Length: 263
Image (cartoon, rainbow, N blue to C red; front, side):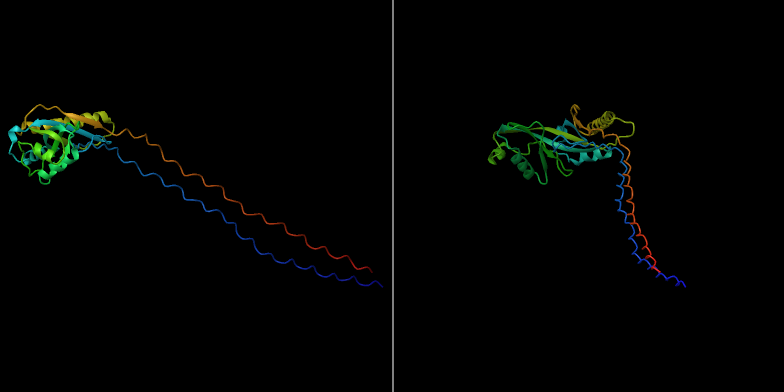
Protein backbone atom coordinates (compact mmCIF):
# COMPACT_ATOMS: atom_id res chain seq x y z
CA UNK A 1 0.00 0.00 0.00
CA UNK A 2 1.06 3.50 -0.79
CA UNK A 3 2.02 5.67 2.10
CA UNK A 4 -0.03 8.77 2.47
CA UNK A 5 1.51 11.86 1.01
CA UNK A 6 3.73 13.72 3.39
CA UNK A 7 2.21 16.83 4.82
CA UNK A 8 4.20 19.81 3.75
CA UNK A 9 5.00 22.31 6.45
CA UNK A 10 3.14 25.59 6.13
CA UNK A 11 5.14 28.41 4.63
CA UNK A 12 6.35 30.92 7.15
CA UNK A 13 4.48 34.23 7.03
CA UNK A 14 6.67 37.14 5.89
CA UNK A 15 7.86 39.37 8.66
CA UNK A 16 5.95 42.70 8.81
CA UNK A 17 7.91 45.69 7.55
CA UNK A 18 7.96 49.02 9.26
CA UNK A 19 5.90 51.58 7.37
CA UNK A 20 7.85 54.13 5.26
CA UNK A 21 7.97 57.57 6.81
CA UNK A 22 5.73 60.09 5.05
CA UNK A 23 7.46 62.22 2.44
CA UNK A 24 8.45 65.68 3.74
CA UNK A 25 8.02 68.45 1.19
CA UNK A 26 10.43 71.39 1.39
CA UNK A 27 9.02 74.50 3.08
CA UNK A 28 8.53 77.25 0.51
CA UNK A 29 9.59 80.79 1.36
CA UNK A 30 6.75 83.31 1.63
CA UNK A 31 6.25 85.44 -1.49
CA UNK A 32 7.90 88.89 -1.34
CA UNK A 33 5.72 91.71 -0.06
CA UNK A 34 4.29 94.06 -2.65
CA UNK A 35 5.74 97.59 -2.68
CA UNK A 36 3.63 100.22 -0.89
CA UNK A 37 1.49 102.43 -3.09
CA UNK A 38 3.35 105.47 -4.36
CA UNK A 39 2.45 108.77 -2.75
CA UNK A 40 1.40 111.77 -4.83
CA UNK A 41 4.32 113.62 -6.35
CA UNK A 42 5.09 116.61 -4.15
CA UNK A 43 7.52 119.41 -4.79
CA UNK A 44 8.72 121.52 -1.91
CA UNK A 45 9.81 125.03 -2.81
CA UNK A 46 11.68 126.76 0.00
CA UNK A 47 14.05 129.65 0.53
CA UNK A 48 16.81 130.04 3.06
CA UNK A 49 19.24 132.93 2.68
CA UNK A 50 21.54 131.66 5.43
CA UNK A 51 22.07 128.27 3.79
CA UNK A 52 24.16 127.58 0.68
CA UNK A 53 22.29 127.30 -2.57
CA UNK A 54 21.52 123.77 -3.58
CA UNK A 55 19.45 120.78 -2.67
CA UNK A 56 16.56 119.19 -4.43
CA UNK A 57 13.29 121.13 -4.39
CA UNK A 58 14.72 124.44 -3.16
CA UNK A 59 14.01 127.87 -4.56
CA UNK A 60 15.93 130.89 -3.38
CA UNK A 61 13.85 133.97 -4.12
CA UNK A 62 15.16 137.22 -2.69
CA UNK A 63 14.78 140.93 -3.13
CA UNK A 64 16.73 143.85 -1.65
CA UNK A 65 14.75 146.97 -0.66
CA UNK A 66 15.50 150.30 1.01
CA UNK A 67 14.42 150.54 4.65
CA UNK A 68 15.59 154.13 5.27
CA UNK A 69 12.04 155.26 6.11
CA UNK A 70 11.67 152.48 8.70
CA UNK A 71 14.72 153.28 10.85
CA UNK A 72 13.69 152.91 14.48
CA UNK A 73 10.51 150.99 13.65
CA UNK A 74 9.92 147.51 15.09
CA UNK A 75 10.58 144.62 12.74
CA UNK A 76 7.20 143.21 13.76
CA UNK A 77 5.65 145.75 11.36
CA UNK A 78 7.04 143.78 8.44
CA UNK A 79 6.26 140.36 9.88
CA UNK A 80 2.69 141.31 10.79
CA UNK A 81 1.87 142.53 7.30
CA UNK A 82 3.53 139.50 5.72
CA UNK A 83 1.35 137.27 7.91
CA UNK A 84 -1.78 139.13 6.82
CA UNK A 85 -1.16 138.23 3.16
CA UNK A 86 0.10 134.68 3.87
CA UNK A 87 3.66 135.51 2.89
CA UNK A 88 6.19 133.36 4.70
CA UNK A 89 9.20 135.64 4.69
CA UNK A 90 12.33 136.51 6.62
CA UNK A 91 13.91 139.96 6.82
CA UNK A 92 17.65 140.56 7.04
CA UNK A 93 19.56 143.80 7.61
CA UNK A 94 22.63 144.06 5.39
CA UNK A 95 26.06 145.46 6.29
CA UNK A 96 28.91 145.56 3.77
CA UNK A 97 32.38 144.84 5.16
CA UNK A 98 35.57 145.42 3.17
CA UNK A 99 39.19 144.82 4.09
CA UNK A 100 42.00 142.29 3.88
CA UNK A 101 41.94 138.66 5.08
CA UNK A 102 38.35 138.87 6.31
CA UNK A 103 37.53 135.90 8.53
CA UNK A 104 33.89 134.97 7.99
CA UNK A 105 33.61 132.70 11.03
CA UNK A 106 34.93 135.33 13.43
CA UNK A 107 32.73 138.03 11.90
CA UNK A 108 29.60 135.89 12.34
CA UNK A 109 30.57 135.25 15.98
CA UNK A 110 31.00 138.99 16.55
CA UNK A 111 27.64 139.68 14.92
CA UNK A 112 25.79 137.18 17.09
CA UNK A 113 27.51 138.51 20.21
CA UNK A 114 26.65 142.13 19.39
CA UNK A 115 22.92 141.50 19.02
CA UNK A 116 21.23 139.36 21.64
CA UNK A 117 19.83 136.13 20.17
CA UNK A 118 20.80 137.31 16.68
CA UNK A 119 21.18 134.92 13.77
CA UNK A 120 23.83 136.09 11.33
CA UNK A 121 25.06 134.79 7.99
CA UNK A 122 27.31 135.76 5.11
CA UNK A 123 25.68 136.65 1.80
CA UNK A 124 26.45 135.08 -1.54
CA UNK A 125 29.61 136.04 -3.42
CA UNK A 126 31.71 136.72 -0.32
CA UNK A 127 35.50 136.95 -0.65
CA UNK A 128 38.33 137.61 1.78
CA UNK A 129 38.24 141.29 0.76
CA UNK A 130 34.48 142.02 0.77
CA UNK A 131 31.36 140.38 2.13
CA UNK A 132 27.78 141.14 3.06
CA UNK A 133 26.85 140.47 6.66
CA UNK A 134 23.18 139.49 7.07
CA UNK A 135 21.44 139.87 10.42
CA UNK A 136 18.12 138.03 10.62
CA UNK A 137 15.58 140.32 12.25
CA UNK A 138 13.45 138.98 15.08
CA UNK A 139 9.95 140.35 15.60
CA UNK A 140 11.17 142.15 18.71
CA UNK A 141 14.17 143.76 16.97
CA UNK A 142 14.32 147.39 15.92
CA UNK A 143 15.30 148.28 12.37
CA UNK A 144 18.63 150.02 12.91
CA UNK A 145 20.21 152.71 10.73
CA UNK A 146 23.85 152.13 11.69
CA UNK A 147 26.27 149.23 11.16
CA UNK A 148 26.05 146.47 13.73
CA UNK A 149 29.87 146.16 13.98
CA UNK A 150 32.56 148.81 13.68
CA UNK A 151 35.89 148.41 11.96
CA UNK A 152 37.99 148.57 15.15
CA UNK A 153 36.00 145.75 16.71
CA UNK A 154 36.58 143.50 13.69
CA UNK A 155 40.29 144.30 13.53
CA UNK A 156 40.73 143.99 17.30
CA UNK A 157 39.38 140.43 17.21
CA UNK A 158 41.66 139.36 14.38
CA UNK A 159 38.84 139.09 11.84
CA UNK A 160 40.53 141.30 9.23
CA UNK A 161 42.74 144.28 8.63
CA UNK A 162 42.20 147.61 6.91
CA UNK A 163 38.48 147.14 7.56
CA UNK A 164 35.66 149.48 6.56
CA UNK A 165 32.00 148.88 7.39
CA UNK A 166 29.01 150.48 5.69
CA UNK A 167 25.28 150.22 6.23
CA UNK A 168 23.05 151.41 3.39
CA UNK A 169 19.73 150.82 5.20
CA UNK A 170 18.99 147.81 3.02
CA UNK A 171 16.76 144.95 4.04
CA UNK A 172 16.85 141.65 2.21
CA UNK A 173 13.54 139.82 2.00
CA UNK A 174 13.65 136.05 1.65
CA UNK A 175 10.37 134.41 0.65
CA UNK A 176 9.55 130.80 1.39
CA UNK A 177 6.71 128.78 -0.06
CA UNK A 178 5.50 125.21 -0.50
CA UNK A 179 3.74 123.92 -3.60
CA UNK A 180 2.36 120.56 -4.69
CA UNK A 181 2.70 119.35 -8.24
CA UNK A 182 -0.79 118.58 -9.48
CA UNK A 183 -1.69 115.92 -11.99
CA UNK A 184 -1.05 117.11 -15.53
CA UNK A 185 1.11 120.03 -14.38
CA UNK A 186 4.76 120.33 -15.40
CA UNK A 187 7.55 121.43 -13.09
CA UNK A 188 8.13 124.52 -15.24
CA UNK A 189 4.49 125.53 -14.85
CA UNK A 190 4.65 125.00 -11.11
CA UNK A 191 7.82 127.08 -10.83
CA UNK A 192 6.27 129.91 -12.86
CA UNK A 193 3.10 129.92 -10.73
CA UNK A 194 5.03 129.97 -7.44
CA UNK A 195 7.32 132.74 -8.68
CA UNK A 196 4.46 134.93 -9.85
CA UNK A 197 2.48 134.50 -6.63
CA UNK A 198 5.48 135.26 -4.40
CA UNK A 199 6.50 138.34 -6.38
CA UNK A 200 2.95 139.67 -6.23
CA UNK A 201 2.88 139.34 -2.43
CA UNK A 202 6.26 141.05 -2.00
CA UNK A 203 5.00 143.87 -4.20
CA UNK A 204 2.01 144.24 -1.86
CA UNK A 205 4.37 144.30 1.11
CA UNK A 206 6.41 147.14 -0.38
CA UNK A 207 3.33 149.17 -1.33
CA UNK A 208 1.72 148.86 2.10
CA UNK A 209 4.76 149.49 4.30
CA UNK A 210 7.49 152.14 4.23
CA UNK A 211 9.89 149.98 2.23
CA UNK A 212 11.14 151.52 -0.98
CA UNK A 213 13.13 150.56 -4.06
CA UNK A 214 12.83 148.58 -7.26
CA UNK A 215 11.78 144.98 -7.13
CA UNK A 216 14.67 143.06 -8.66
CA UNK A 217 14.09 139.43 -7.74
CA UNK A 218 16.81 136.80 -7.56
CA UNK A 219 15.73 133.17 -7.89
CA UNK A 220 17.54 129.89 -8.05
CA UNK A 221 15.33 126.98 -9.03
CA UNK A 222 16.51 123.49 -8.15
CA UNK A 223 13.48 121.29 -8.58
CA UNK A 224 14.03 117.56 -8.19
CA UNK A 225 14.24 115.45 -11.36
CA UNK A 226 11.17 113.67 -12.54
CA UNK A 227 10.71 110.27 -10.90
CA UNK A 228 10.99 107.20 -13.13
CA UNK A 229 7.69 105.84 -14.45
CA UNK A 230 6.11 103.47 -12.02
CA UNK A 231 6.27 99.84 -13.07
CA UNK A 232 3.70 97.22 -12.05
CA UNK A 233 4.76 95.06 -9.14
CA UNK A 234 6.46 91.86 -10.10
CA UNK A 235 4.51 88.68 -9.35
CA UNK A 236 5.99 86.42 -6.70
CA UNK A 237 8.27 83.69 -8.06
CA UNK A 238 6.64 80.35 -8.83
CA UNK A 239 7.28 77.74 -6.14
CA UNK A 240 9.43 74.78 -7.17
CA UNK A 241 7.58 71.56 -7.98
CA UNK A 242 7.08 69.27 -4.96
CA UNK A 243 9.58 66.51 -4.51
CA UNK A 244 7.93 63.07 -5.14
CA UNK A 245 8.08 60.60 -2.24
CA UNK A 246 10.78 57.96 -2.52
CA UNK A 247 9.63 54.71 -4.22
CA UNK A 248 9.25 51.57 -2.09
CA UNK A 249 11.64 48.69 -2.80
CA UNK A 250 10.02 45.58 -4.37
CA UNK A 251 8.81 42.88 -1.98
CA UNK A 252 10.99 39.74 -1.92
CA UNK A 253 9.41 36.65 -3.59
CA UNK A 254 7.89 34.08 -1.25
CA UNK A 255 10.18 31.13 -0.40
CA UNK A 256 9.93 28.09 -2.68
CA UNK A 257 8.33 25.01 -1.13
CA UNK A 258 10.76 22.17 -0.33
CA UNK A 259 10.85 19.29 -2.79
CA UNK A 260 8.60 16.36 -1.97
CA UNK A 261 10.11 13.55 0.10
CA UNK A 262 10.94 10.48 -1.95
CA UNK A 263 8.52 7.57 -1.46
